[in-house]
Length: 457
Ligand SMILES: *[C@@H]1O[C@H](CO)[C@@H](O)[C@H](O)[C@H]1NC(C)=O
Ligand SMILES: *[C@@H]1O[C@H](CO)[C@@H](O)[C@H](O)[C@H]1NC(C)=O
Image 1 (spheres, rainbow, N blue to C red):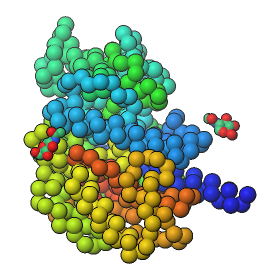
Image 2 (image 1 turned 90 degrees about the horizontal axis):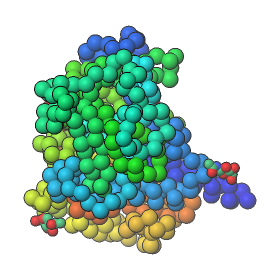
Image 3 (image 1 turned 45 degrees about the vertical axis):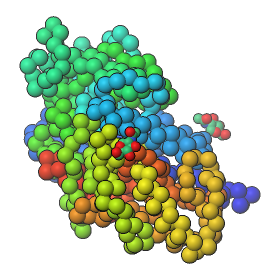
Image 4 (image 1 turned 90 degrees about the vertical axis):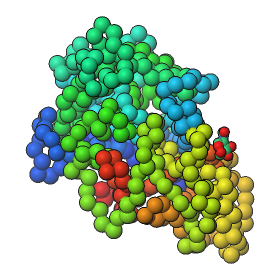
């Protein structure tokens, strides 16, 4: 019995570890900062990030088993990966309609208020999206959502934008209103009006709030009923891309094109925060690598040159991570997925090198014990902890994630697997980034990062 309980506890801890990242938005009030609404420029901003399966999420389910959770996270990662792949191949995520795959593929959300008085809702956080949008009542068609619907007519701060507004550039003008329409590769869509509103970010601490006025967003009047088929937790998307329409760029001098996060593994109780502008803290012992010129899809790309295992470079051919004309290749950083992906040749070389490494320890290779689609798995001897460091050699920097971010270590089963999948391009995902402070400076186009205990953020 004691054995079973112990097994259960480690299993549960593992599930938290796998989920790894937490994001949810309350606004942590900064000490010494003035409170109230509509503050001036250069103030910075902080949002709490809510991980899909964290205790702060409406999707939190203490009964979800580790296996189910890992499977879901792998599935979500696959869907998101597929969508990015389609976008890279076709130039934009807004064109072309593909056979339906379930759209429900987000990992983090933020909570915010729209309008005055504010209607509180949750938006799915997407670093690869430019436009922020939410469902607006009355709608012609919509997907079910748990947060209350926002009614522009009941808000004192709602206004439509004239068609010559810079946020409307390239969008159709109907009855002097600027319209938008987005079709996703999974066949889902949203359409409506580009408008401006006050967005409020509430703090748990003492009921204070901070507001940002005049933020342009898509007020969705029509959307696919199956856009978020399973979760209903969110009412739209908050984009952190580098286009003028993204929430990040609309914050202007308040964000200065800068945002940061430090993702807490879920087995820790700390919160993860999304910080903008002056709220982005200075980091020590940081490394910096350029963010490459933007894709049409607002993904953030890095120049990855080589990998290393236990300090030994794999010496991959120089063009291993180059971007191909058909949209394959390249290296993206995205916190919307759990599982990291690696382009074929590099994946094979990495697996080969890890096999050599673990041979020295006489470890026994096994099939993925949980059937989650991971390719390299081992039986883990009791007490084994000699995992190699896997290095990602970027231009000007080496990213060395923690072993427990690279390997899915299952203490209950006594196994571990490489938490990386083979793909058509390389993508550094959320779990890999946990316990690192990542600072994106979109104006200067650089990424600065350093190891940190994110639970202390
Ligand atoms: C979780 O399991 C407990 C005990 O088996 C049960 O009482 C509870 O209703 C379950 N909760 C959900 C959300 O399924
Ligand atoms: C894309 O281009 C690369 C390099 O030219 C090639 O190896 C790969 O097979 C192509 N992939 C697709 C899906 O066309």
